[in-house]
Amino acid sequence: MAVPNSPSSPAQEWRPSFNPWLIALSVMLATFMEVLDTSIANVALPHIAGNLSATTDEATWVLTSYLVSNAIVLPATGWLGIRFGRKRFLMTCIALFSLASATCGAAPSLATLIIARILQGAAGGALQPISQSILLESFPPSKRGVAMAVFSMGVVVAPIIGPTLGGWLTDNYSWRWIFYINMPVGLTALYLCHMFIEDPPYLLAAKRSAHKIDYLGFSFMAIWLATLQIILDKGERDDWFSAPWIRWTAAICIIAMILFIVWELLEKEPIVDLRILKDRNFALGTALVTLVGIVLYSTITLQPLLVQDLMGYTAFLSGLALTPRGIGAILAVFFVGRVIGVLDSRKLMACGFLLLAYSSYMLSELNLQISIVNIALPNILMGLAMGLIFVPLATTTMAGLPNEKMGNATGIFNLMRNIGGSFGISIVTTLLARNAQKHQTYISANFSAYNPIFQQYFMKLKSIFAFGSVSDHASQKAMITLYGLAIQQSTLLAYMDDFRLLAVCSLFCVPAALTLKKLSLRKGPPLGVH
Image 1 (tube, rainbow, N blue to C red):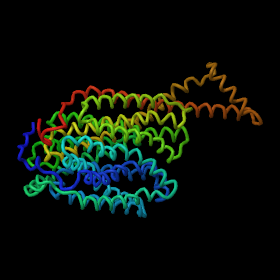
Image 2: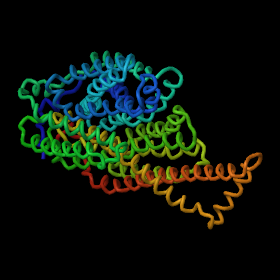
Image 3: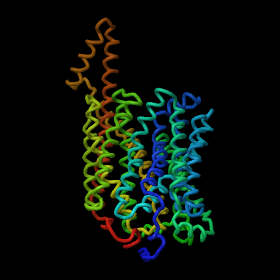
Image 4: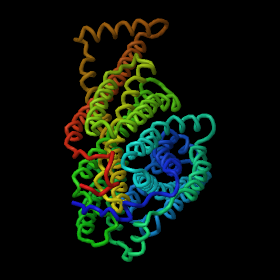
């Protein structure tokens, strides 16, 4: 248990020189830009592959390289902020992210694009946790719910807007503009951070006392996070553990992870302080945000695939179908920001998880006769659910931690949300392929001359195709048509299975949210009191 800070502690007495809302605007621009890039390139992969003379499979390294470098930097953000100064480190990351974005847009080859994406991911990995820790420190306890509401606007809404914006830019201009649009945002964020961000006294003191660099801990962390991301991203294509390279990579990942955990627990100045997980709320909140990442990124991945593969939507329209979720999230965070100091945060989260489960179940009831209007309602409800969950979850998870632990905590918190997203995407895409094959086997078993319903449809189609055609050709066309319908229906059933699984996952979070320790956010010292 953390030792409470004394009332005279600089960490408690310090307040920023500028209005906290100016600080919020500064860091939120950077966060929104970074989170947007986690999903904006997804819909442009075929265009990138065609333009750079690469296969679609090779082009997926544009996504994987970003995720790997992003994951490696995320948990080390707190340590890097102390080592180099948080303001300086933040501004360096924004500048490097903007420069890497420009390089991505101008890339003449796939290799150049991948290298630039690695730099972009490394720079972007620090933006989320630094922004979150700055917001939590800049606002008094009674306003931290509002601060997290602002933060969640970027974290929840940006991945939803990404596919829509990326599809529109790719269809109307070029895939290169999905990277060029970061330039004006990055330059504005850089200027605002230079003007309004400052390092608190405890960070300056910690910087002076920091001497040793935990090279070994960073090496173990880089190896296990990089191998984990590669396995999650490429495993489905190579049938997971049936591929020897997956087995070897998984073994390296597990060994490196164990060595990392042991080393960081024994090291006096670890690059990632895992001892912070002794705080009950932080440990449980981190587990919950992992599940939130699974549901959030899984549905963002599944829904565009559903409407593109089975309903013929364009890349832009498939992204547009997610827009109502952003509207719901914005409405929710405004509401939660006002009531979080009044209503029990645990009950808000429980209601959010129940609503998330119901909206996921609604998506599992969709069929191929629906319009985009039928997709809007469950998406609005899902957006509302995410707003009800994320703001109180982030606030409650961090509420019992001292300021000097905030940078380290936000790095772990955001890392686990991203890892949850990677796990979720891998799980649902694997189940989608395998359940589609399973349903196809069951449906095809009814293609029998002894099945009167099948025979009725077969003969009807045969008579249609027989008009002006050879009878044998008509039979062949009728069978091909019925088989195509079987594939379509089996794929739809597989999507329904995935959405039901996500609904069950959401329901399991309800009792976990209620077991969090209730902490007051309205009065008392800023942080560190248990």
